[in-house]
Image 1 (cartoon, rainbow, N blue to C red):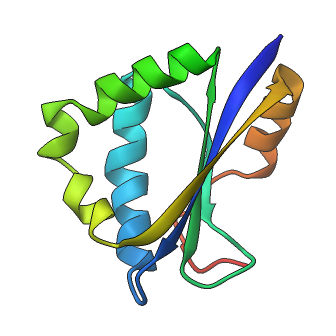
Image 2 (image 1 turned 60 degrees about the vertical axis):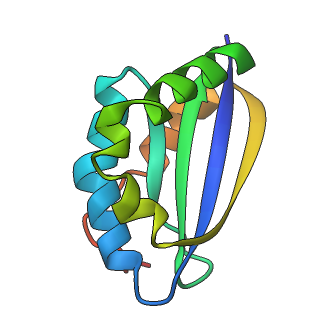
Length: 120
């Protein structure tokens, strides 16, 4: 079975990484998972300071669009962690790739999130 993964990378405003990670880890990711989204990996990027990644897997492009529209359009998101995250983002980039389920499982097991945003 193939899966569509979205790799979202963020360049954060200077000095905001710890607070961004806290909001992602304790609020946004649990909300995403409750809404049924497959969060594969997230955390600080090891190659640059003030960068972060979020990887999600979907059945199709249509599923991605529907799930994200429902989530980002919800009052729970808008009234919840949205500003704590969006206000700390300088820029972001999305990349979509088709991969096997085995690749998703491998990515998930090799990139477990850490509570420490500054790990290397």
